[in-house]
Length: 417
Ligand SMILES: Cc1ncc(COP(=O)(O)O)c(C=O)c1O
Image 1 (cartoon, helix red, strand yellow):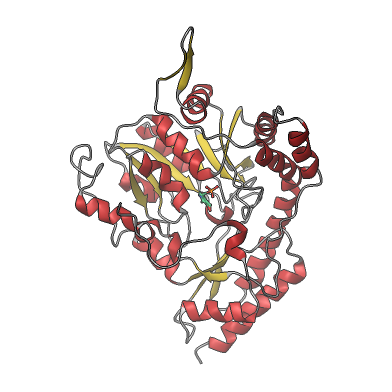
Image 2: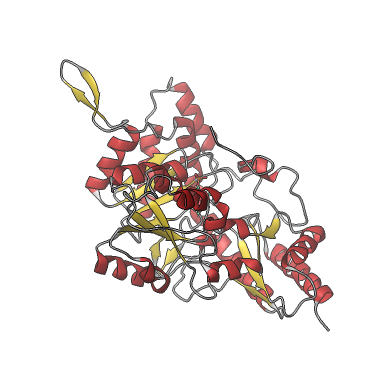
């Protein structure tokens, strides 16, 4: 066994926020919908005969306006069963956002596909058709885009590019639940989308997630591969496993929580949109500090975190020192986001590519891969980027004003004369 770790084991969910305090709200304890308890009780009182997961799936699909929702225990497993269900060849490539969470790429890696990271667009945290196009090869099968922080990628040119090359488009909508692009909801802008209802996500429920699609055949294949463990029923025999599948289903009590949270999400997201626009406007007035740009095509900005770049030429301090001072002044959970850059964060990628470990051996790979020192735009962007993922629906206008005041004070204290 060669599993090794650097430093302390990572924490997730509410555990990751233990001891995170300051002068602004944090998401925990989460605001729970008024009917969550009722739905959980229904599950318990039904003696586990409730169809709560199906009810949530129907409700979520209806709210999004799509035909199918396949509920799972998280987005990571959702994208894992999608990757398995695609049955592409080992060594096939999927182009993916370079700035994201590991959960975006885990499924690709486990299915022995090769993640190819597109660089981010200039002045953006997202990838674009222009940065995706040079990554397309004869082994490319799909494009997996991530709407980071809730800012939706410019999907029309990405879909046009994918159509030209016959590629599937997948959205990772984990950070953009119920955000809108040109009036259309995130997660309805591609062939299939993944969502997270993790405790800290915008629709915070539990360790939950979903895939949504309008494609009947794909939805059926995912349920067969990902939820029925690749099994069918043979008369006179019983289950036969015709595919080495998975049993990745959302538990009933999680579905009950998700159903209750779905009832309050649209109002919460509308409020987040108002708050993030106000905060971005206030922070944007501080010389040397630039909040994430909100493109004109964005309708509702379902912001999961607030992010800003600082101009290191304008200040005497480093990005880390600036972030530390913001934390000291009372912004909870503030820090840099370098770990969102997948090529250096997923250290196993470069190691496996260098060793030519399967699927980097040729075959099944068609060429050599390297993950060190790639995506220069994304790397430079994250060097002076500060974010707080504790931005949440509990913010008021006063909180935005206080946050901007703290940023201004730290900026002035460190400004070069
Ligand atoms: C962009 C993105 N993709 C995927 C994931 C993984 O989601 P989950 O924790 O539900 O597996 C996350 C969660 O942090 C995320 O932010």
